[in-house]
Image (tube, rainbow, N blue to C red; front, side):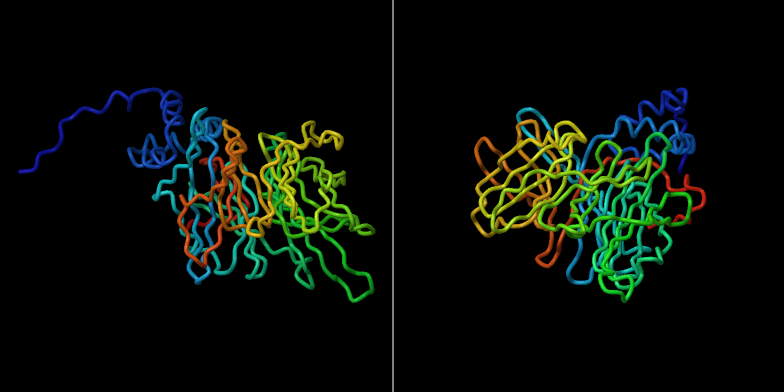
Length: 383
């Protein structure tokens, strides 16, 4: 015959809330998710602002991998933990940390645009330019309103997603280029700004440059960055800097060009610094801006390999430099790979299994429990 359990509550249940929050904030992300189901008290503690902020301070840097199926299947988010030791490094992927984006999101080709404090910006480029902010840990998402001023005749659309610490504001920046009128020479660039919680886009009146190609904005020192060129001179690329707090645009010189016949250049972030990858038909170089904002401080930090083989031609995006100086990169929006300058070994990683027709994107990601419900004017859905 069944009998009620006579076990007394664990002493851990009687600890002060701040101590419980301190203990739980040190656990792996999946364990914390399970802890929300232990009891109502823990669930309440884990939803409090105190815990959310404490966990974010301690949350380890990882990866978010966005897998896009070429066979019409729903997109998938996969999360990876980075374990970087002095003598070895690993990417750990828990199969349970897999999120099906077919639940609630409109079908179409979505693009990973940026990640800040556990929030991710997605753009659905074939479904009315739908733009989303989501948190895969809380499984919440917001669909941003349409930015009507770029609906017609655009050719290039690119985004950036950033955070203003001073005002605790999250902002999405969208550039659109195209012929916005029938007048000759009307190919121009426009810029829209969306602050989470306002439920509206704002437009910058004048953008004096064009972007080199569709690209994600790179967040460094509170500013977003893209490769661009002046409307009157397309021979040399420049770095477009957008000050998120002041909402000002500025153009500065980028790193020197290698001068190869075929060149693939892209911006990135390494160890907190703005960097530029230059993959030409002769070599692959990563330039790093050592002193932020000073164009004279571009340093040729890493010459990774001799890229004469045609199979290595394409855009590389650096993600992380391990302690042993191995560089983790994304190649051609399809492969995660590493290169060790000591033994000169280039390796394609297969930890995130993908189908033959699938493509993937990846970026550094810090998991968090920030709830999108804190942006009171936004309509929050769950996937």
